[in-house]
Length: 221
Image (tube, rainbow, N blue to C red; front, side, top):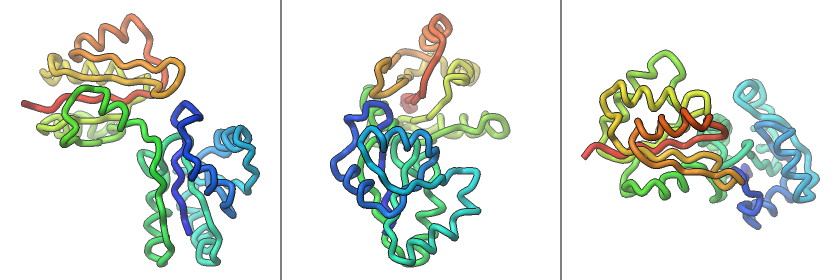
């Protein structure tokens, strides 16, 4: 069986009892970064075989791990933080496992966009999760398309591009639309800044953006 096991995005207390049990029982744990996952396993005193599985090697290693699953081994897939396959590796392994008739289970658990969306104060009845926008080619086209929706838009962004994103919103003529920017969710320096794109830009111009960011943009009225 293949288990997708969410891991904490910050506070280690967010891991579930079930996630710990699966990690302790797995024949093999696949990790996006074995160093990061190794520290998590050490904290919870879990000693299981660990192998790397990330965006740069998933195509090469896919067959080997599928064969191990077909041989009745239990594999747990984790990312550095949050739920695997949500803006992280995992999709290819899940798709191939299902093709081979292998049972796949995803445990419920942490993912950054849910608390950011709920804390935004924007409508949660309908929302568009876009994840990371393209860094260069097609970025403006994609941004225009997603912002034309009448529901809340949720984006992931790096600290290096948060100010750029606010500037892009202003350039597109929606600098007055309300945004909610959350960073370092569940960590010591967690912060949510709410206001217009102009106001958020002003905030992070004075205070250099650091950490992992989730940006929520209110939908068109």
